[in-house]
Length: 283
Image (cartoon, rainbow, N blue to C red; front, side):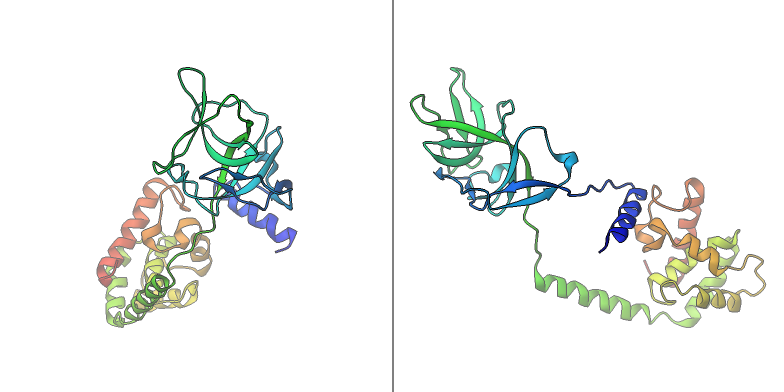
């Protein structure tokens, strides 16, 4: 993807209410994972860097580091996750911190007790809190301000099964009898008060593969053949204009806050679509 395409993508996302950020600032990345269990030897020197949006970075030194172990699973931090650690900031009870104890490092929750003693508390009852002794060489390196989760993966066979079900559904949709489609169009036609309202009928037919996606010409011909005397015949250009935002999706995904029409006009489009579904015997 080149710069022009990226900018166009960002503009499109912003028009849809999203707020994308450009990863344009280098942050140190350490290779050795910090344990969420028993403290272990310190991490290596920085071996790489990652790019993050400057809007998400603080004025204090910070770095990214992977974690391992299960002592922080109660805080939704798991092996393989990355944490962003900021140094030189004020700490408060229940903050998650990276600590060094006698040269070993660990990730824990920071807490002080009634006597002012500092504790490092795991978020897994299988582990015991660690009290920082006065004579130990202990220090808080920094506070965790962000957790970056591992890219999730789903079950391969479940995906295949879902595809097969979808394929079966598509095959079944082709079995809608032509006479059923004709009767449905004639039944819904009196509801059409403006030519562009035919889009609700088109969307239902496209959802069930009676007409092709964006094949407005075939739809216009179909309507003209079924209700030739209707004075509000659909036009390809108007159908194209209506195929935007949530109206470009299956009727079940239409949203009042993300549609090319609003208020009662949206409600009426939905009413036409539901009537068409009812006549075809689909959902």
